[in-house]
Length: 120
Image (cartoon, rainbow, N blue to C red):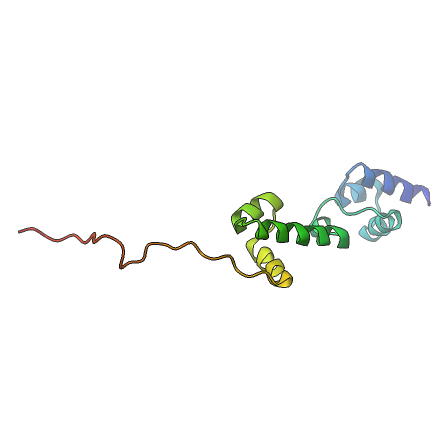
């Protein structure tokens, strides 16, 4: 590895952003990305930093399935795992899990009459 790429690697490991590395070393995004890929480093920021490895993805699906089978609500799963309700729904469908039965709510017919009538 050349001295420049070694410097880029050191800054990447230290958590520097692409902008900081470009300013300091006067290199291109392409050089930084190639160095990162060569070293097998994952991005620390941006959308690529949030992508899961296949193993992490499989573990997430397994954990969501466990929580759904245990009766956890989407809100509880979102809070614990940091994923959105549509993602939970996709995983539930992928696993073939049925919808949890809804808790019954009081229907309009069962609610007490709360209409206001005018008194003369």
